Length: 187
Image 1: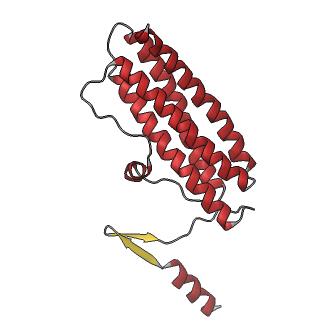
Image 2 (image 1 turned 180 degrees about the horizontal axis):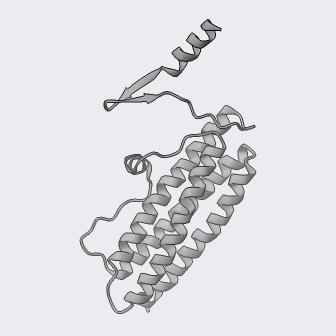
Image 3 (image 1 turned 45 degrees about the horizontal axis):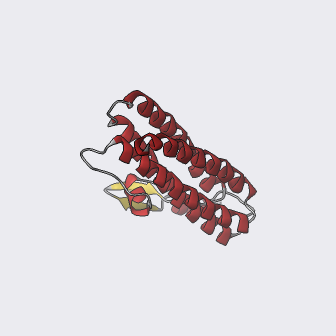
């Protein structure tokens, strides 16, 4: 009994020092029937999508906050609605990664290292350029979602593929609305 208590104590006292704090080491292992390779591949694909979704969300809100011009109200509301839809994807993506046994993104820094949708830090962007850029970014996200779908399908992750199919439809709809909104600039 004493040996068991010593082992238990020695195991629970293993700590790692991080930035001056003691952190108890405890691996997060979510049970799954997927193989270790499937978990790795699916998590990587979904985390790439998640980084792009965060980048697109922030850019959409940036343009929402900085919209100007005669169609301000319509475009401001459109981008607010699209931002809400994009943000709704984040929790589902991250939780899906955890459900299949993976680890998800932990910081804005990690997002910035992984994102494939570029930021726009310009002081001023015309409404036409905002909408055109977001249209292209949503098309980029659609391609990213299709790639992730292929990975999930290869590993028979039906739940992830089902979610991704809905997100592809939503992303294509955002692209369509943004494209149609820019047609007035070309008429």
